[in-house]
Length: 388
Image (cartoon, rainbow, N blue to C red; front, side, top):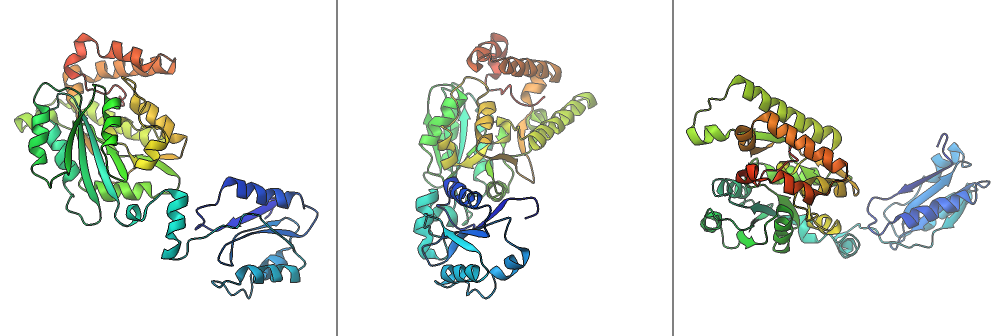
């Protein structure tokens, strides 16, 4: 307590604990600064969930305050008050009598206060959402990567593909892929064109407790469910994303990559720069497969339905609620098609211009009109916010 006026200790199993309770505790201690005072928050089971002391409490008193208490019984609160009074410490009880979570019978309180169901805790379910527009060449690989651990008993997985009006046969490929998996595991829905609109529409059809947003030209690593759940379990994390990686589009088509050393160097720099930004500054991009609880997604209102930079805005929204964490382990692999088609420097320059204009408060829909100009219509699903 050196240098501190008041200290409050709380239990970690009190789902109804709010800032109002903490403010009341500190206020009680501050109003009695000239006294040897403690404040206690009574629990419904006869124990307590909070105890606070001010700077006038002697070190010896603190050492003795918690001795000879029958912890785990319904008389803990009364014993604690008696121990304090014997040491000359004045006790104040908070007006909030809260319930802690000690047994399975207390889970009703946990569900009520947190909105987290027992099913979500015991058998977490995932919905992988894939927005598509003319992605006939890529969509099946994306679906397969999402469903590769679908047989796991620990996690339940479904895929919702939302088509924005494809004309290249993408919906037919999705339907064919769906037949390879149990009925209802792969769903096809449709919406107006626009990645944000498509992803929000897909969420309306999602049954999972957790959501993962996967671009059609991106594949997930084999351990994605375990890694994502572990990432979201970190304290203070509101959203996660994977490390960025690239898959060689030319090698997929010809089985042999003939890229120059210069292009390969550019791609290595691109990957390194992307991962540096996302890990150090918590600034991942949509290609890195955002994931979060459905509850958190709904709380921020879903993706802002811009025609461009919806991922950048989503990261900003999520950072208001906690950390944006990058999952440890293997990266997602995104097609290098746009850098291969347009060149590293052209893509980089265009992306930088878009982001600078956005920082200068140019609306994303205005930027979309420029970005999706006739010269780029062949790759209209490209994401300009990919790091460069």
